[in-house]
Amino acid sequence: MCAGEFHPSRPEQPREFALPEAYPTMQILYPFAGPVAEYFTQLDNPDRYRPDQCPQCQAKQPLTAHGFYTRTLIDSAFDGCIRVRRYLCEVCRRTVSLLPEFALPYLRSSVTVIALFLMARLFLGKTLKEALLPAAPYQRGQSWVRRFRAHAESLSAALSALIPPPPAPDFVARALTMLHTTGWIPAHRFLFAGLRHHLLGWPGSLIPDGRRVTIPPAATTG
Ligand SMILES: [Zn+2]
Image (cartoon, rainbow, N blue to C red; front, side):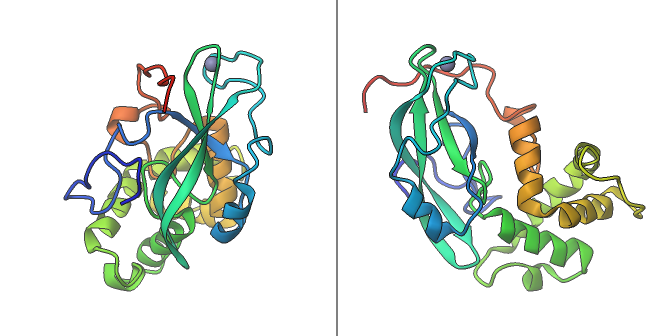
């Protein structure tokens, strides 16, 4: 487990992040869509993607670099810890973290891993075992399917701002087709950055936009 994760996995969703304490910050997207290995080489310069205003209090003042937290990430060719850069707003004293576009809030697996699984399982009709990465527990796949089914209708509606909804037998098929046509990462960028919409739906405690109702101020040390 990486430093910065505070709670053990919940048994019904093996190896997913506990909520909501694992990320006591607002997450916005780091505009980087390349491979994981390339992300590491770009992280050390805090100026590169420094937000020039606060997305929480809207103060028009560049945010201050505020270290990193680490989280795990499972991608097709990577399974380990990544650093996520944080910034502090000196006006409201809250932090913002810059999540790379290949990662989803609160899920260990990358957008690509989840996309390949959902297409294999729900579009091509493969079994859970066939659709998952070899070492992945089947409960993880079941959880993704459950969340995607519950969220498919609102996902289709949101994506209709990008492309016309295609004819499809149900919302799951429609949403999958729209995601596939748009590209999962561009669709995730549009949904998350523009609408605060999570590809698999926000966990219940963070509805509607991924933020808790009250956000504690950032610690001034550490
Ligand atoms: Zn602020």
